[in-house]
Length: 183
Length: 183
DNA sequence: TCGAATTCGAGGGATACCCTCGACTTAGGA
DNA sequence: TCCTAAGTCGAGGGTATCCCTCGAATTCGA
Image 1 (cartoon, rainbow over the protein chains, first blue to last red):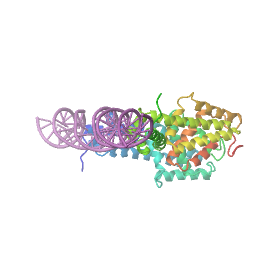
Image 2 (cartoon, chains in turn red, blue, green, orange):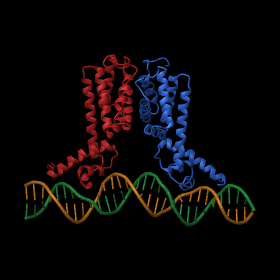
Image 3 (cartoon, each protein chain N blue to C red):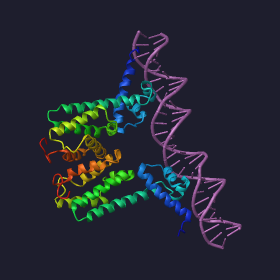
Image 4 (cartoon, chains in turn cyan, green, red, purple):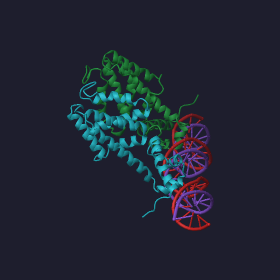
C-alpha cells in the first residue's frame, strides 16, 4: 500500500484543503486553483502533485459541504416542533449561503437532480410541517427550494440584511397568518 | 453636420442595436461583442465602425431598458388601486427579469445608487400602498428591492415557474393576510 | 549522510475577449 | 455608366486568465 506521506507533505495537503474551502467560499466553484495554492502558501505544482486532476480537490470540498447540509436537514427533522425544525433548516441553509458562494451554487443546482438524500429530507420536512398544521398545504418542496434560492441572491447583494428578507418571507409559508402558533 | 448614413449602413446599425438587445437579454451584460455582430449578420469591424468604444452600444441598450422599467413604475403609480398598482409593478418587473438577463443584472445593481428616478418611484409605490392599508407597514422600499432580486434568481433557475414563487411571496407583503382586500 | 520524496515556479498551451487595419465592396451622386 | 467616398470584412495582434507540466532545487527522515 502507499506509505504515509512525509510530514511536510501531509501539512501541505491539509493546508490545501483548508485553503480550497476558503477560496471556494469566497469566489465560487469556478475559482482558479492558483488562488487556492497561493492561499495555502504553496506553489501550484505542489497542488497538482496532491490533486492531479482539477476537480479532485474541488470535489472533496464540495462533498463535505453536501454532507454538512444533509446533516443540518437531519437535525431539523429531529426537532420536536415541526415548524421550528423547518425554520431552523431554512435559516441555517440561508446562513450557509450568505457565507459561502460555492455552497450557494451547489444548493441552487441541487434541486435539479431529485432523488438525492438532501431532497428526500426536504420533502419530509415539508410534509411533517404540513401535517402539524404549521406550513401552508398549498406549498411543496419546490417552494422551499425556491425560497432558499431566492434568499441566496439577497444574501449575495447584501450579506448583512438577508435575515430581514428571510423573516418577512417566512410569513408567506405559515399556515396561520402572522406570528402563527410557533412564531 | 454629419450627413445621413448610407442606406446599407443605417440598416446595419439598426440590426446591431436589435441584435445587442437580444444577445444581452440572453447572455447578460458581459456578453462578447462578437456574439452581437454575429447575430446582426455583420462582421466585428462593422460593429466597431458604428460604436467605436465598447459600452457605446451596450449603454444604448441598457438606457432603453431603464427607461422602460421607469415607465412601468409610472404606470403602476397611476393605477387607481394602490395595491393593484404595486402588484402590477412587481409582476411586470419580475417578468422582465425572467426574459432578460441583462435587465436582471441591472435591476439587482440599481438598488445600490439611490437617488435614481426608478428608486424614487418605488418609494412612492410603497408609501401609497401603505397609506391605502394594503401593504404591511413594517416593510419599506428595501424589501421591495429584495423581493425583486429574490425572484430573479428563481426565474433564472426555472423560467417557467417563477410566478408560483411570486404569488406565494406576495402573501408576505399584504397587510391583510391571505387574499386581502385587493386580491 | 544520501537518496527518495517533495517542492518550486517559469512557461507552454488553450481559450476568450478586446480592438485595429489594410484590402475589398458598394451605394449613390455627377 | 463611372467613380469615389463610405462602408464592410475578417484575419490577426494584444491582453488576460486558467489549465497543467516538468526539470532543477530543496528537504525529510531512515
